[in-house]
Length: 489
Image 1 (cartoon, rainbow, N blue to C red):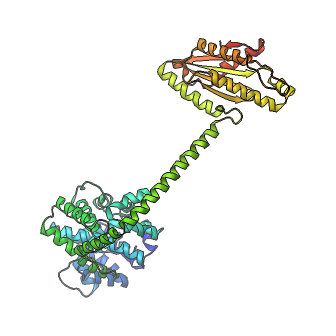
Image 2: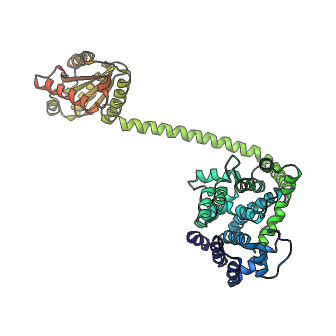
Image 3: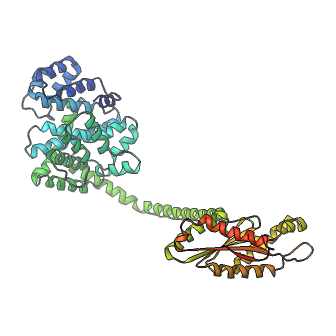
């Protein structure tokens, strides 16, 4: 209760605190009406609002009253609690244009709920007025921190608001509204009615059904396709047991009751139009939209073309960026990062298919001597030539890469140890017979090779062990004379 009252104080007049005390006492099972009357009399502002409210058409009392004791006596404990709750909610609504939008939407749901309850011949329709007023309390809560943004939500067609809230990263107002109702210690049926008023299916229980219907009746007056919203409202009323003339007459009464409810809460609102007037206004706006349709369509086509061009440019830029990030700048072969990704991918595939997979490690022999003798520029030419030999000698589907310095690697899908040996030997012969350009004439180089292979279940988690096995075989090739191929043990 304290948390909810604190929420109220942000934008409220002092009346909300008095109302909150009434609510708190009225929730006690053994509370007496004299106690609540005494609390009402102690707060002159609250007392005046009680008298104004009970004399308004919104609460539908049969005769006028002149003082707070009479008002409290006619309302009883339940009625006084509902009135206090209504004042708590209404006083959460700030002044100004944005606040007026929130006020009108809240009161429209309240009077819609009351009218639905009367049409269904429910006793104590003020209970339903209160629950209707609570349907927008989640939006009132968010208005404390972002009034303009919340008003934008409130301007949307009613049934679209939760979707917009989700898209903006907001908590949907039925969720926050139910939590505030829980903090105010409302009965579980009231909390559920607030939580479910935007559900697609009709909730169970009379409070939930009327709250659900009130949301759709109110939504008929709140933007979007007026005809479709009116049809939705009539369909919703039929689902909860109100149809025919009773439903259409109820829609006609909503604007009148809304103005009376605003007066009861001492708040000024714009004149409220009936649905027929809203339909005529919608038709006028439709004519204006049709007059501008062609120019809007042309501009839309231009925007779509611009969007498509930007998307294509972005795709190309991303592809180029990904290629740069995965390519060795000197040799244009895949780099170590790209090779590691390919190795993980092909090991996983080999594990599923039970096929073998081989790796060939390649190291240019005495490369330091090339740099020392001919210079680093020639060394770079040699590395590019080695890359060309590896690239053109491998099979389609094999993946060459430069690991760094003079070390290269080849990934051979669907190749066992013997297949890897054949590929490595072919590379060894081709490299040894390929002339390398030097500053004073061509020269030849050789390379050493280490081959390792795995298959089936052994592929799982083998990224490190497979490379270590091939590297160990390469080291053995270097140790035993170079220019040779050694298989992993």
